[in-house]
Image (cartoon, rainbow, N blue to C red; front, top):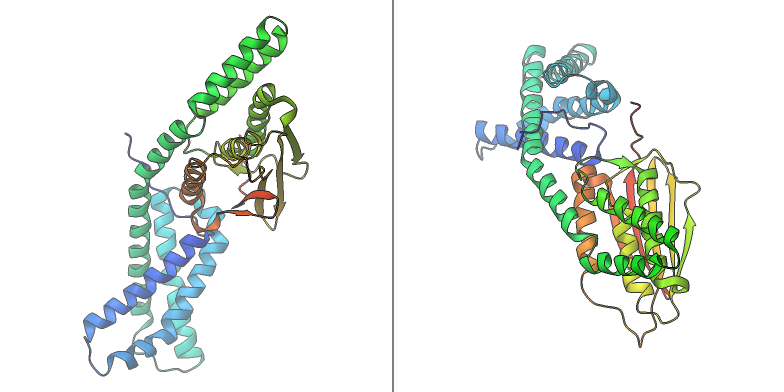
Length: 336
């Protein structure tokens, strides 16, 4: 397997920002504990340094947040140099402002503050580079899991049986169903590490439900609330189909009269919101147990790998519906 290329972290990702703050504060604690292990002056010196360290850290995080789009287009090595240069500049400016501008007594020089900022920035970047390489095998594992789990073998058999039943009387419809089935399996074999446009996922969802409609006929009722969905928003592949498959299997199939499946997608405050709802089956019928959490756990893992702490998946039950909600940041497709 080709080693993943080094890349700067996304300084607008909530998980990245939180890890930066925690790691920098942890490094400061370790350094001061090593310098004065358990001594009475440790706490006083720690608080004294906070007067400079905290403003520098928070300002640097803000600067990186602002310049992140530019940094993401910069080659990795140049980006590392730029981040460390920004750290040194911010530290030197804060030191000069506090010591010269406000006349506060600081125990170090501006050069010392700048060098400490560079070392901390280098340690943080080293951590993110290690984490990037460490998580790459997990991305491959998520791909394997997506290849294995989402379209069950019995779905293939049911679909083929539906096609065979149509071949003699409705050959055109049978041919269309085979095209839909081919599209589904082509998506299943795609690289799960790459995000895809939402429009592609919606086309796949239509193809899947068209196939299921052949088998379930009037028992499957679908409501599409996707007119306000941003088609170019990037999402993990096979995000919608497993959720719809769960709705069909646990909502429609156990209900003698069928059930309603609702897909709702819209944008809100730079986030993509996805709801998949299905009517609950009658209590006496019950729903097949197991399996549905496998699909949800798979999607949850892939959301975490792609979006870190910025994505969320929740499931809950109302009086008459089972609901899955997915929330993820909107990343528009880059122009080719």
